[in-house]
Image (tube, rainbow, N blue to C red):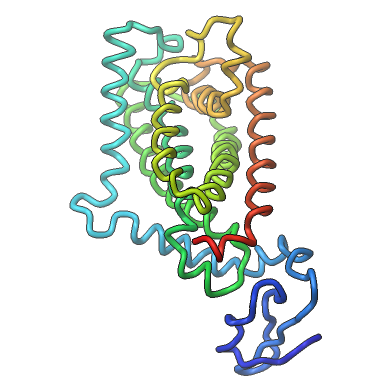
Length: 300
């Protein structure tokens, strides 16, 4: 059934029977009512609502550091202070080796870069549906837009931290080699590695609000079990494959391989396993999110 309805009423039609309204004329939209249409057109709906995605992403970026004293400088201060602490603890006190001749502060910052991208996306996305409860309960759109849009803030912080790393590389006279051309691939890999767990935690956080306390613990625990403050090469060979089941391991090793001029090496069997884990978690995250999506409006 196709019904012309006033544009101001289009948002009030229940999600279960509607798909994105198409413009028919001035002040009027054509709304298609058909059982199962929303499910069949879910992925095309994501493209149809791309403007909403852009609006939500820009809003989250705009308010990220609103009413803060030093604003975007937090994107520099956090990784810089963490780098100093890790350099002192792992490099000076524990005397763990770096990769080749790479200065230890550069090694740590090269690991901080993907880690903060991963952890920021995970934290922002997991709380996104709860913080957008009013929007979720009022209008239909693919709910996947909300956690993905909230994750875009992490890319802004990533850019600032990347500039900090480049400054450190110039200061310590560390030049990247030809592997730098693969950097976009590893940035995409870091995004995909974070989206899978983020979608799982987002769905769980809507139903069980306890997860808002668990998520910071997961992030903090992951920081110390991932090769952020040390090189993966310190892990004994017999444990490298098991260690690579942490999806962030392959991402961090890939970033260092791109940035440190060949000083850092990738353990390719472990990297292949990390890719498989990233793909599995991404599939599981999307499946979990889609399976619980219909209940979000009632739970938030």
